[in-house]
Amino acid sequence: MEDWALRAMARWPNVPALFGWLSLDRRGRWRIRGELISRPQIIDTFDRNYAADEHSRWYFQNGPQRGYVQLETAPLVLHAEGEALRTHNGLAVESPSAGWLDEDGGLWLATEHGPAALSDQEAEWLLAHLQGAQGLVDEAELATALALPAGARTDLRLEWSTQALPLQRLSRAEAPQVLGFVAEPQPQPGEKTSERAPD
Image 1 (cartoon, rainbow, N blue to C red):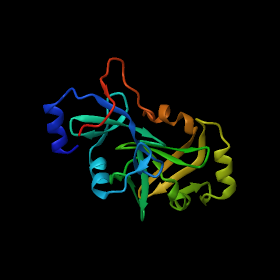
Image 2: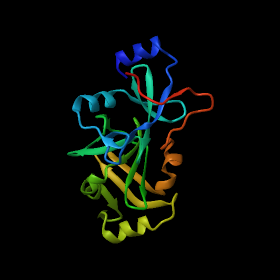
Image 3: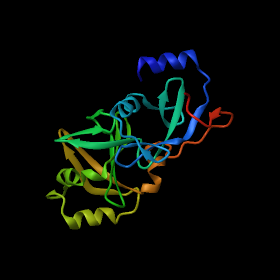
Image 4: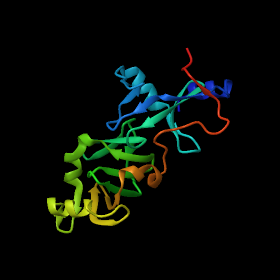
């Protein structure tokens, strides 16, 4: 969180929160009321002032006001940079603690920065790092793993850098509960809300 946002929060601690305006899509792109944000300066500000509250709702801190974010997949969307993985807001992922594959072959990770999903644009990276019993996963092994019920441990693992992470099956619909985040934030009882962002 940037200093200017922290100062604004301290100066105006009771500004009503904003719900239903902001979203993060499955490729890690910010949207306001469904419209893609394209200005680099705005994206950079969103990226640097993005966090989760005590209820696992993710938000953008806009000065003194929190704008809660609807999530198409996970709070953090991962992109490959060579061998490295980075979140959509530029954080390096180095020590995930758990990994899952959903019914569509999507990768989800519990990272040191929070719950994350690999962008669907990174399928080639994923296939290059999925290991089965005899090395790189083949089509039959992947199909067998994806046919398992949610919660089952697969015979696959994600290998990159120094990681060798066993993968479980995950139902995409259950991802928020399993990974611990709120996909569609709603106000808590008694929480002040606003219909518009501050000028």
